[in-house]
Length: 154
Image 1 (cartoon, rainbow, N blue to C red):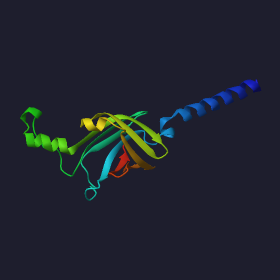
Image 2: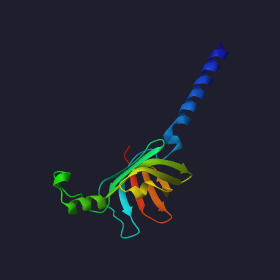
Image 3: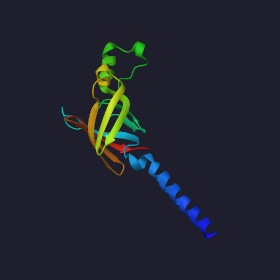
Image 4: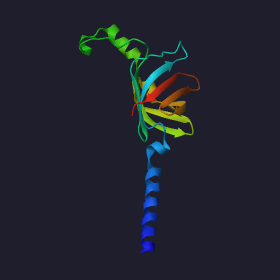
């Protein structure tokens, strides 16, 4: 009987270790949804109260969407009623990029499958150094580029 209890407890312990080791959050601190809280581009002062932006990381895929700048998108009833100038403003304001990613140490490498512009879907993709501190994430594009600060929302 003691062997059966010992075996059962050992089996439960092994199962618990297996389940915990399979947890994506334990392996990958990026997993989840992150709200953009600051954008510091090399072309100007940091935007500390940015327009909406959401970065999502699943097991192997990511999706980045944000409105650049400090102004909201133009308000018009539909694309067929928007002026060309309004459409250009929207195009220039949006950052949209989604695809696959890998993490090696503190380096995030993205490879876009779909993006706002075709040039973003070819080539080697983008690289970022990242730091996660609790619910805060900082992405620094390499070799030189934007620094995006985010907070976990899920």
